[in-house]
Length: 125
Ligand SMILES: [Zn+2]
Figure (cartoon, helix red, strand yellow):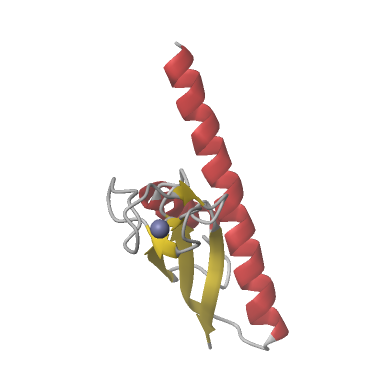
């Protein structure tokens, strides 16, 4: 029961995010005097909870009848970044390995660096 509720919340979250993506893309295209959105490139942090499939599904529904109908979504995943306190090195996390490539100590996650989700580029005509 609890799990079903949580799942519902995540879906709502993604519907809201997709709506925001769509509105941004439409506004950008309009500002640039374009009438048709062809492609939207999105960047998703490794640790963000967003499912690409859900965003694609909502986008298809929400964009119907708008200048963004049929636009392609392209996702780029960015890896989480770690910071090593003892030696000050910043590096990308590889799988479940937290160790610093310089000194071997265990790095800590840089807050929110991999939870991002934003529009990188919009292609329109
Ligand atoms: Zn280190």
